[in-house]
Structure formats: C-alpha cells, structure tokens
Amino acid sequence: MPVAVVATLAALLANVWLAGGLVQQKRNGSKEHDFWVLCQPGSTPRQREDAFRRLVAAGNREWRSADVRGLNLTGISIPGADLQYARFLKTNLRGANLEGALLGRSTFELADLTGARLSQANLTEARLFQTLLSGATFRGASLCAVSLEQAQAQNADFEAADLSDADCKMANFAGAKLIGANLSGANLESTILKGANLSLARFDGADLTDADFTDANWWAARGLTTRQLVLLKQKFPPTTSADPALKEDYARWAAVPVPH
Image 1 (cartoon, rainbow, N blue to C red):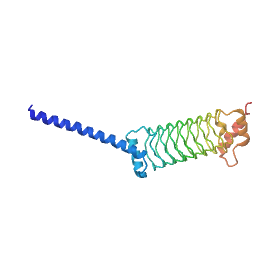
Image 2: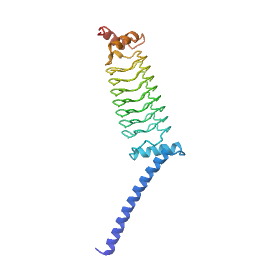
Image 3: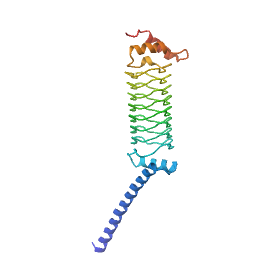
Image 4: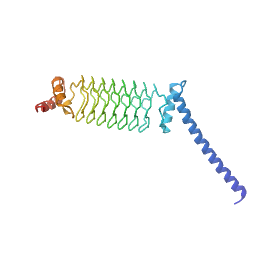
C-alpha cells in the first residue's frame, strides 16, 4: 500500500478519534453545566427545568446539592429514575410518571403530585409534608418511615404499599384504597380514613388516636387489638348514608362477638 494512502488513513482515524473525544468532552461539559444551573441562583425557571430533564435523561444520580424547588414538571415521564435525596419543595409533578423510581430520603414538602404514578417506587424516609397526593397511585411502593403529615391523599391508591412506621399524622386518606397495605407501627393520629378501603391492611402497633374511620371497612383490616376493635365498633359503625354493601358486610362481622 502506498505510503501516501497509509498516511491519509492514519490522519482520518486520528480525526475520528479526536472528534469522538471532543463530543464526549462536550457531553460531559454540558452535564456539568446543567448541574451548575440547578445549584446556582440566577437561572430562569425554564432553564432549570430543562437542565433537570437533561440530567435525568443523562442518568444523573447525584442530587444532594441540586435545587429543584418550585419547578413545573407537570406530566414528566421518568420511570425508574434515581432521584434519591432530591429536593422537590413546592414542585409541580401533577400527573408525573415516577413508577419504580428511587426517591429515598427525597423531599416533596408542599409539592403537587396529584394523579402522579408512583407504583413500585421507593420512597423510604421521604418527606411529603402537606403534599398533594389526590388520585396518585402508589401500588406496591415502599413508603417505610415516610413523613406524610398533613398530606392530602384523597382517593389515592396505596394497594399493597409498605407504610410501616410512616408518620401520617393529620393526613387525609378519605376514599383511599389501602387494600393489603402495611401500616404497622404507623402514626395515624387524627388521620382521616373516611370511606377508605382497608381490606387486609395491617395495623399492628399503629397509633389510631383520634383517627376518623367513618364509613371505612376497618373490621376487614388485620392487626387491630381487641380494645381497638371494641372502640371502633362503638364509634364507627356504618352511617345511615353508607353504601348498602358496606352495611351488610359490617352486619356479618358484628354478628360474631369480638374475642376478649
């Protein structure tokens, strides 16, 4: 092969290698720039939102220093994303798809997750103080030791979710689906469970002080003590406006004496 041809091929290969290196360097630089945008003041909300989306797409896993407060991420679809320790304070995540996402120790205080999808997500020790969760789906999600104090979770779906040791003080679960959910050791003080479906839900060691079980099928739950069952029977039999099927189910249960 002529020397000139060999030299030309070598030059072309060197250029390709150099170009590839420059592209990778540019990508890394862009990722670092996007993270800088989220960490430093002065960027517009739109710039921060775009930076967040690009970082998630790039597989970023470090969010401790990032500031994602107040972003408008309505309808964002990032299933399986690693967002541990992220701070979503007052962030709009209405209708977001976060199924299977890693959200351990993240903060969603005062955020809006109305209608969001979080089935199979891991929210262990996450903070959801006063978070809007109406109509959200948490099927099979891990919410162990999560803070849900004063959260608004009306008609949310927590079927088979792990809420053990969760702090749900003054949270609103009216109409929520808690079928098979684990609420062992949870703080349910002054929690609203009106009309909730509690079939096979676990309440072992849960604090039920002043909890509202109006027209909820608490008798179909598991782990309640005899004392708790007696008190619930006295305070929360189905109301006159309850669904007839609920009344019939309660009547069948009440016909069997509570064991002492």
